[in-house]
Image (cartoon, rainbow over all chains, first blue to last red; front, side, top):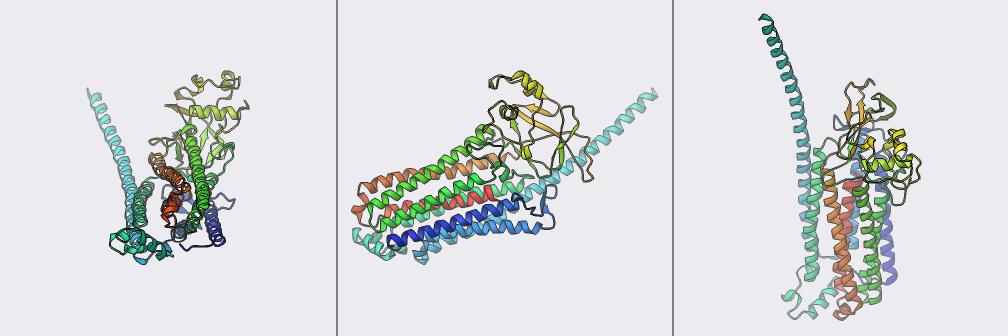
Length: 154
Length: 350
């Protein structure tokens, strides 16, 4: 948080704005590319049944996702360290704010895994219901036949 | 430098910094507590965003953001502009962050005029962002009829084709697996239909299905009923009354189109399906998270305004601590920008 001269200050702000704007533009372009909007076929498509992206370039989608997350994290770093002047604070203050954030690493892994598990469980149950209902139908059909035969005897 | 500000603070405080003679972490009480407030706020937002991710992972399909967010104010909705408007919103917020940095810099230089001017610019930026968000919300709520419990944006889980009015397959109107659709409200469908029917209100009322799929249904009936180019909102024409209409079903004021799915060999199913609403959680998560962020922006604008007035009145100049109050609201304002980075990532980019 130096006492910058007016010119130095303007220069620093300009640099920050251009950097953040360019990164945002790159993010949007990468995102649109990943969704096949830029007139370029990204070479992968989403298979809803498998819940997976498939196609020769499917791994590229992971790259697209990681790139977007990485660029966002860089923007976050830039805002905190340059705009909020975290770099000028003492180490204790920096660490007391940033280290608790590490808890999110596990929270994100655990909760997203949990979400995926809910979906898998639901799919299993839907599949089971399908099998059971078709069994019920066939049992009913057998019963009906029996009734018919029984009725015929009379 | 940092120590200068602290020294100034020490000199002012009666019992020394924080009354112990030495400021913990060489920061003033106010600034340190602002950092910790922002830390706790970050936990709240991350909690919300993790909930979003968890529910998204747990849903078989999820609305594709470039389909949901492809409208732009004053541009006919049939022009698809995926993510362009939210990019503009991001730029507005980034620029207001930049003007805030200028205000803090001018504060360090004890330049009252500069502080007030750049804070005013920041307020304008914040208000512009709120205006953009208001438009986005009113479009989603008013035009597309999204609510916290209803998400009209669905995704096809199979490839297939829509039906003609007589129940036969319309080969022209096919869709891919993973393709998105919007369940139109009756009102919306009537307007969309109207625009294409050449009755003159093409404007932003028209909202195309993906790839311009919403070709007019029941053209003749429509023309007969509404030849005058203006709708009476209370009169629902026969083709939009509840019930089965051949190529679509109207239920509770929404038009669900019918389709048949196509297997890998290219054969169509015997069964007919109707388009269903998308995962419910999307609406609630969208309104809760962008609303909570918008509320932060709104309260930030209020605080900026109060502090700007105080700065203009010379209150902070008298304190001779380098406009520390401006620095604190600056921290808050940058944090709001920081949160938007991740809201933007989760809702629009990924």
